[in-house]
Length: 299
Image (cartoon, rainbow, N blue to C red):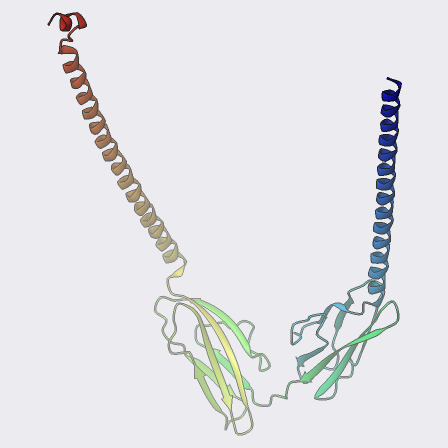
């Protein structure tokens, strides 16, 4: 008995020691894992901070009143902008991707050349520099222009100006098919060609006034929106369209309802016949006399 108790005690002691070892090992492993995770997070944070301090990208770049070509992308470092011949200064807005980086802009003033190079430099927090460049190209000076432009029955928006090359207007007219355009160039020898004024349709119509001489070609455009139906006619047409749609859906609904009713009647008739047949069979079965076992035995 004492021997058995001793064996039991030994087993218990070994079990306790094993559990303790496992617990200690698990705790040690968890501690090591925690340390490793903390170390990884610290390394990651250091790497991110290093990248932040080295970031010299722009978040945005734009020129007030003009469009950059191509569209801004932080990884694209060369751009072009087309400006009028008389522009000498450009207002440029540039924002760094990381707060703390410094942006410097040079070359955006005193734009006197045909092609002007503008530099936008970004100095990262760690002192490294990256430059974005914009090539500002001046449009060639336009000498051939319109001295007057009139379209009968049409008010141009904005009002005519020889330096404005695009206009818009609108009109309601159910019978308009062509426009009477009067355009005069500042050069008596220039050819004036008008395209798009003789086939006016409902909706947007683009009229081109093309001036040309031996030296250059200049194009003025008028976008005319024509409403041939008129507001009242359009509203009436919309009402008629709505009524037609309602009638169409009502017809479909009525047809569906009739089909459902007919199908219900057919099913009811079939069910009624089946029940009647079953009842008749039950009645006939009831009328037939059943032979008892006793009568069968007597025979």
